[in-house]
Length: 565
Image (cartoon, rainbow, N blue to C red; front, top):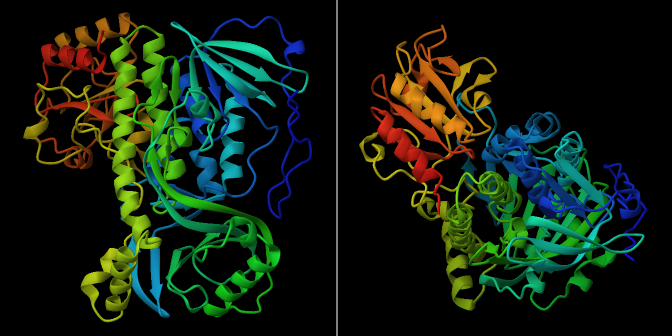
């Protein structure tokens, strides 16, 4: 019998709560569920919340009885907050997190590069936000608990998974013994050490790097701004790299690379941790400042992905699908994009609104995103932790030249996580006007936010299904377009029409009207005249855009986005 710990995890700042386990004896017979999600980290819970937004029930299975230990993922990007806004937790994240936009790289006591993440008035959220993962998990869980379509089960450990022709089954162990759970689809969100991935004998592709890093969260009062700090080749850790981040509640994250040959067990000894952290504080001028250890761990830099995320009736997502280095804050931020994509692709498949090609498209798009990230992360990782003598010589040359030569300093850039653009997606319309636009988000890109009024942004009004943004100076949505929209809705497709233009009164045929008197939306979207339109998928990525839209082309775009085979 599975007996997860009933003792709250230790923490200097987070009050852990132990939840009661879900026991089969307290519930009736188990029927087949639409979706079972194995893993209650950010990827699993966002997937559940996305499915619920599309009206699909799910069961979430968590092996533990409390949130994860330690701060883990702490940096969340603007696009992640836009995704989390859709599931209702972005406001709490912003209220409790620390925003930032600057990153600094130091060598030989000199700042040699300063990164500035872009931000303008049309962005609701800042480029980066620091907040410990326990808080994110708490906010997501409370959103799940408030959602009647989500059955959350603490203390349920999946020990075996079996694929059948039309469903997956899982053996689930609990504190009173095992039971069997069946689902039309099973989502493997069980993390980087995925037991389901191992059971199915799946191999990842990519590279594992030999460098090991310690993560140490310490409570200390440092009068420094909330900015990323990176220190290359310091005197106390020659040839290696140290990173520092401020976290809420007086916590600082210190990441440092281990010397070659040192084991994780040796690195995590209290005397080793104290010596290294004291040396880092001495180097930055705060030696002798009292501090306390909250949590520490060791990780390796890996850039790996499954070549296919769909295996029978099992779909992999998050770290179970790919393993990415933390350089560039890619882990959790990529998992949110995975979950947002999986939510709508799986929901529309379950509802019969599209054929098997839709879920295959999810895999193709997200594997493509993972491979792009693996390539980008590999560049950052090879700079942070050179894997060979040749890479180290190159890195050391850049470090030395950067003291006097400005042209090499951009090589310090850590290639921050960014939303993937599905330019080659099979769902993109081949017969629209994408190539004729001079500006605006193109095929496969996420939408651009626009400030409509104080504390009112375009993305506040979008989400939940397909979105047709119709640009008009006041004329009604043409009846032939309305007829296509009506037919799609009769078939079960959630499709909303938003009229955008220089009017303040409702536009006939539109579900909502957003005024654009100063033309900010039209400028950001590259719209030259009335009658242009954008079609956004349920994950908000662009799948079609037109300078002039007619009913035939809208119908063709919807068919392309929801393949029947």
